[in-house]
Length: 92
Image 1 (spheres, rainbow, N blue to C red):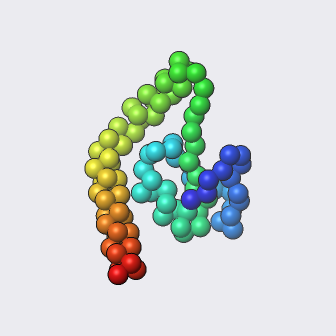
Image 2: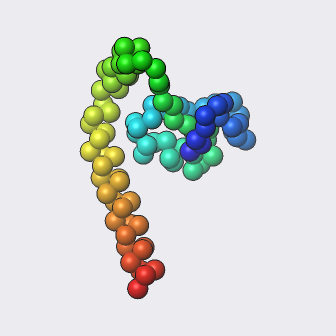
């Protein structure tokens, strides 16, 4: 995925971009970036009274996000195990 503080870099796939709220569904964003799609995360900022209503709307619109937390956790645990096994093999 492309991390940026300004406009995302244009790839060879044209002007289509995939954007997701930071911290949401990384298991979808990473494969997009790995396959050369324009994918990035965004982070809303501002005063709490300005940002919180927006984040609440996103949570309501994406109520399945909470169901995906289990999936994301299992993916993270799997990746951690894979890295530990690789580290142990290289160390030993």
